Amino acid sequence: MLDWHAMSNPIARSAPLFAALFFFAQAGTVLAQAPARTADAAGGEREVVWYTAMNTPDAAPLRKRFREKYPDLNLTILRQPGEKIRTRILTEMRAGRFFWDVVSFNHLDMDALAREGLLAAYASPETRSGFPGGAVDPEGRWAAIYVRQYVIGYNTRSVPQSDAPKSWEDLLAPKWKEKFAMDESDVEWYAAMLDYLGGDKGAAFMRSLARQNPQFRRGHSLLAKLLVAGDFPLALVHAAEMDEARRAGAPVDWVKTLDPVITSPSQVAVSAKAPHPNGARLLVDLLLSAEGQALIRDRGRVPARNDLARGRASSPLKEHYVSPRLARDADRYEKEFREIFLRGR
Image (cartoon, rainbow, N blue to C red; front, top):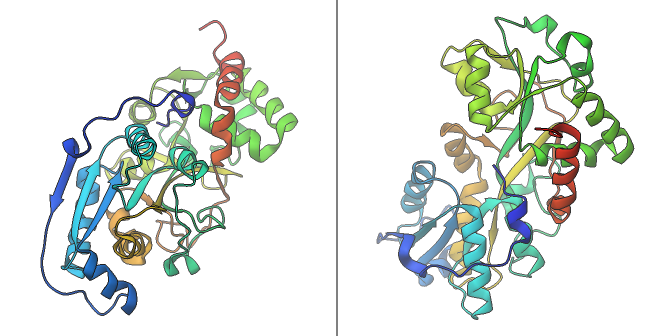
């Protein structure tokens, strides 16, 4: 879950840089598939440093493939939660120290680095096709590698597909009163819906939804489990969790006709002060390539590429990417959300 309030908190003191670093060293020659000049120059750099919020099991196949493609390059990985990575990078910046080459974490933390001028403009050739609007920064500073999609999930034992809501507005029907569950911290979804619908229309929808008396729980994973168990027929959940549950045989599905599907990206970027800029570009290219995106998909995440995400090619979703600028008004959105949905709780 994204920590909206953390975006405006004072920067904490950074822990020692190499406390959480994992080192992976190899030797050999750079493969010819990479752009020649970049690959040759990267071979002389000998290393790439990647700060990432991606968990270690998900990063492992990507690390393995990078090692196979570029055995001249050591890959040094720092894995921490996004907020800690952001704090570390900003603390290092204030000390005039720049250790990292590539960073990948949520779009809110990435926006904090962009506003400090810490991101290089690198338009990876991998982003020329296959990525939807909103997934790639027009200025080339970042690109999405995987996404989290907010959708209406439903228990198919309680709700046949023919009776399931087809739109957000369908949730306002009398038959769904007190039958819909949400995370009590769904502020990101709330803010992005208002951004898409417009202030007046969005606020009217949210007030109407609140009058439906939705049930509230803490955490989307818990919501998904309770939906599978049949505790309620409908819930605001993440699409990937519904897909995973369905593959395991659970009686759930999700609505693919929503307009919009609020889409929250995790992004990758190259440091403007990268010690190893050529190696950094090679790593970013791998993460954004069809090969890298397939490895991400195989770990149960939703890749940013439209041509690889399950089901998207045959039935494109009406995605609306969460704008990083929304985090700059995080306190206002939090206050509104609580006043509309959680008053008296």
